[in-house]
Image 1 (cartoon, rainbow, N blue to C red):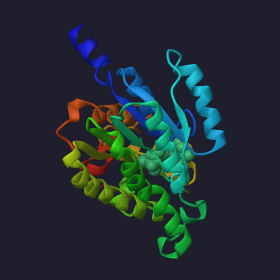
Image 2: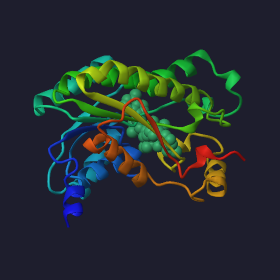
Image 3: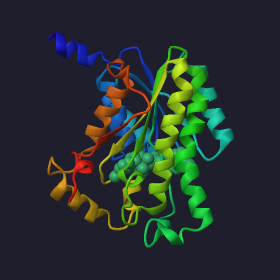
Image 4: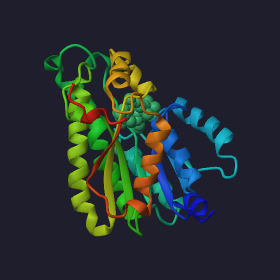
Length: 265
Ligand code: NAD
């Protein structure tokens, strides 16, 4: 009973900003559900009007006890980022956590040879998928008055040359390096910064990667757990990193991939 009580209250009193819900399959949505299960309060940011409508529907279905704050935020637009965090600051006394679950690249740059990536495709992927973490960390820092925890989503393509992942792999490498530099800067303010390297999960973003089904099959065959992971499993590790159980962890990349990254052939 005591354990159950502790589990339910692990994020009690914490306010967490979750960026990147597009629909119910989004890893960000699974993270929000895990946060709510552990007693945390969620504030959402979304990009498109469509995602805003999806979020509204999801909140009506799943967040019945309390209507969360939902704010539009396009991370490629500095004014939008500023306005979003100003709106959040008006509504809450302090923020304790931030989930950055955002990435974007052009479909044509997620196939073929990486060497053919044009400058504009490279810039877009790096800006949206890596620089956005830096910008979001800077925006949330003044709101993390009691310290805090920032969690972002990465993938094995940051460490290995995965076919078709191409420019997004390079963006994820920049993202993981940014986690280390941000952890170093923000540690003095008791703000931790970590990444989860998630295994492949069928989401809207994953649809853009050519040959995604082959990646899912490879994990089933070769990962120590012999299966793919779920968004819920990634959501639960996100909640752990946001909680005080992880108070000694920063600058880290935790793999939630059924162990796929440890195997040779
Ligand atoms: P998703 O499509 O549900 O989420 C991606 C989100 O990024 C969307 O909500 C989209 O609106 C948002 N986004 C893109 N450009 C934006 C911008 N300019 N401003 C604000 N938001 C923007 O897909 P997902 O799989 O849940 O992706 C979430 C994160 O998880 C991404 O960083 C992705 O690379 C990472 N990830 C996914 C997988 C996977 O297999 N699905 C594996 C490892 C890591």
